[in-house]
Each structure stands twice: as structure tokens, then as C-alpha cells.
Length: 270
Image (tube, rainbow, N blue to C red; front, side, top):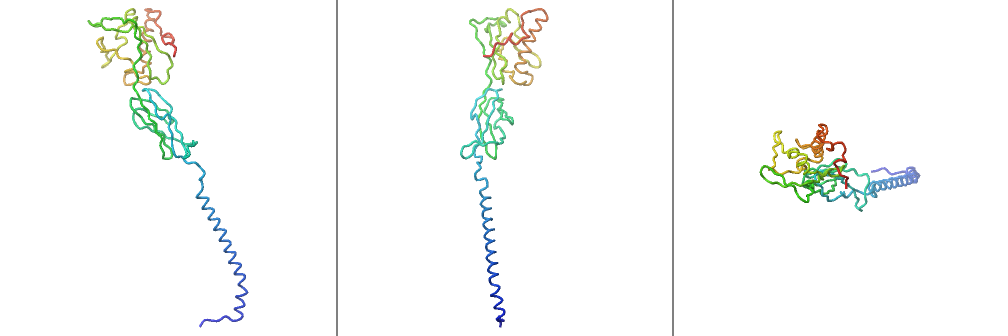
């Protein structure tokens, strides 16, 4: 049988009851306070950054562009939020789909050969794209004369223009204007051999002849870079024309062949 409390034990329990009740109330109050703080902390963590805009889209401009081989453009990328607002301080990486051009880390795209290239801006796992079409360099502009001069060529009669306007496209920066070449004077008055300008080098020898078509210089000489044995276009012109003119002056064979001042040959840029 279990023990029964005596009068003294009962009185002791009744005396201790208010103290226990106060303790239980205090513990409950502390528990509620800490519970509330925990709940507030959870809510704050869950909503942290709720008001900050997130990158949702990358816009690349120009979205579509057509270039000529050798030309360069600056491509821009902008990060947009879900509301279409521009987001600052977005770091983009650049990539290219296709082998018709190249792009540097600053977004400068250079057209290198005919075709199509897709420029890609990358940030936070998102991609923005733009399409660039690259066309080949056009042939040099030739100003047809009122009457073409007839020159005998190995038993055949070929027609050559009296004046040629050399105005090549494809330079990144056009520093000078076009050059007007008096073709007839060089051929008939100055007695410059056709192979003095026209050439087709094979195994170190010029095999071009009058029976062959005269290709435009730009068809072999790139405006911006050397390709194989073919020098850059400007260097090729200067090496051929200025070297010849300088030699004539030094040998007292001409007093008017220009080679010192650019403006003696180049017209003003339009």
C-alpha cells in the first residue's frame, strides 16, 4: 500500500503551490517570447531580398547588323529585371557562335570572313543574343572614262579605263580619301609596263600577262592584315607607287612624281 501524506506533508505541498505556479507562469512567458522571436527570425530570413530586383533577361544591341569583312562594331549588353528595369553592375562574358568573326572582352566584334555569327552575352546563367551578317569586301570603285583607251596586248585589242578612282572599303578607320590614278598617262606617257603594277606571283615569279584579267588589288590584299605573302592593302599600294615615284625622282627621271605628301595623291575625304 502506498504511503498517505500526513497533515504536515499536505500543508507543505499547499504552501509550495503558489511558488510553483509562479515559476510555471514565468517559464511559459519566456517560452512564448523566444518562440515569437524565432518566428520573426524565420520570416525575416524567408523575406530577405524580397524587394531586390532579379536578373531575368539580357538584351544585346544591335540585335541584327550587317558588316563588311574587316569592319568592327561595339556590341552592348543590358540586364533587365522581371519588370523590364535596367539592372546596374552586371558583369557580362562574351562568346561567339560561328567562325565568321571574333569578339573581345569589351564587346568589340570584328568581321573576319563572309557568313553569319551569333554574338552571345552571358551573366548569371542567362544568355542574350544578336546576329551579325558578314559580307565580302566590295571591289574597288572604278570611274569609267568618256572614251576608253585602246592598247595592243599580244596581238589582241583590250580596252582599259583612262582614269581609275581607287576607293577601297573595309578599313576600320578611313584616314585618307580616294586616289585618282591616271591609268592612260602611266601606260602611254610614262611607259610604265603593265607588270609594274599588275602581278600574280607564283614561286617568287610574276606570271601575270596581258591575256589575264587585271584583278582588283583588294581581292588579294586585306585592308587590315597581312595574309600569307600578300601584304596589307595600304602597304602594298605604298610599296608599289611611292617606291617607284621616289626612284624616278632620285634618278632625275621625273620632277613631278609625288611620294612625300599624302595630299599629292589622296583626295579629301568626303
